[in-house]
Length: 428
Image 1 (tube, one colour):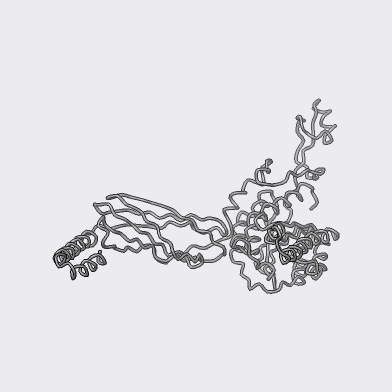
Image 2: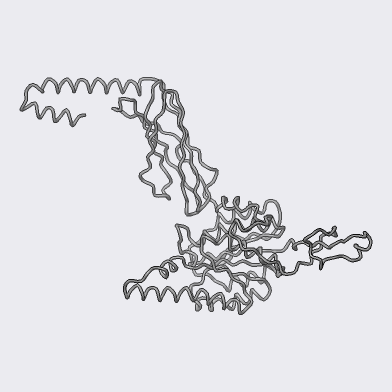
């Protein structure tokens, strides 16, 4: 409007009849601006707003934040909401426009995906209100300095909560596991029903009851399972915004819940230059909270990992045979050979499963159509690295060490499946 009035005064130099019209427009603008100021500022009526966040964020998942607005003005207003999102998200253009009816309410939500653990501080929730005249905006400020901690992915924990009890695991992407024999943990003698294994018939009980009776067995319980997280430099590689370390932390949280649901003891620790974040394997009710807090507090400078210290610590502190799931990463066979003596030493007394990652970006490069000599060269090198990953699996198998080679996004499913397979085979 001001630019239009200025243009009018310029034209009035050539057309004098416009001069008075321009001053009339100035008067109207000042008048309506004064009315707008009175509407927004001269009354006790105002706007109320609040930001509702989860108690804690789930790392690597979409987390919903909701905003509620209440209009106490007696006329409809236009609201421009600018939320000062934590700096970790690097969102600098957040703006949502809403229309609020007279004495009306409104709410909306948006989602944030954190990619690292820690404390996230929100700034002000700024609401700019304009009347139907739209000449003046009044700012309201709410919810300053709100902090939300980001924990390992508890959303995945809820998603797979019933997985330990479900027999229909294919819907989660898990492979069907053929049970080889059965464990020797006797549970009860029961009547035979169609589908029971006839090899478990109890002939003495059958003779006494004069009907077929079978022995029922169950998976052995109270077995010890430790998740060991390598927080060295090999775990710094990022995929989809999350480091391999955070993928391992999220997987450990979900797997701990499955282990406890199956009646086993779950524990964990991390290592790089030294062993830290130790949680002794137990089945107590507070175990999940203890594991969650320790996973949240894992901090690292991504130093070179000391496998000799890991070997000594396991030999000293874990005295009976346990399942040890080692989250780490090997890119080459030479890298494995440097640590292989320590892995073989651990595998002598425990059932060791090495969990490491395939490079999904290499797969994309291999599958891309080559158009130049440079592309052919790059694909050849990428295939060499992918082949070395498969060689690492075979090298571990030679020494009786189990392995899981998985993509980062499939880590949780693949590790749960490996644990359930070990339980089904009774090899622990």
